Length: 126
Image (cartoon, rainbow, N blue to C red; front, side, top):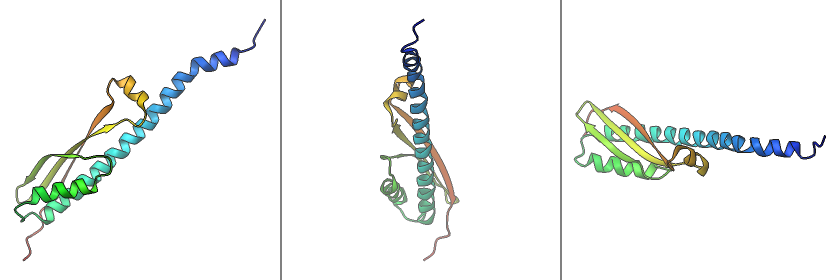
């Protein structure tokens, strides 16, 4: 019996599955990191809006603050409410996969992540 090259054939059959698993792990970690970062930016922006709640242009200031602190692109503020008690911020961002292989499996090259935060409005001080 000839067994030369058997290990190489088995490795060639298993390699695509191992690479798919490795790419999925890398992309999942990347998306989880981006989600954590967006949640932190959302909380910081809500805190900023709660402190400056009495300003007339608080939404513009909060969006500028959000964009200046974003690291993975530009998140968009999908909801802003300053009803006097709480400053509520909702954000979303399109994230591209770090490896291209996961995009081939899912059929899309990006994923949308969302975050929300609410902070109590600070009393206005003169």
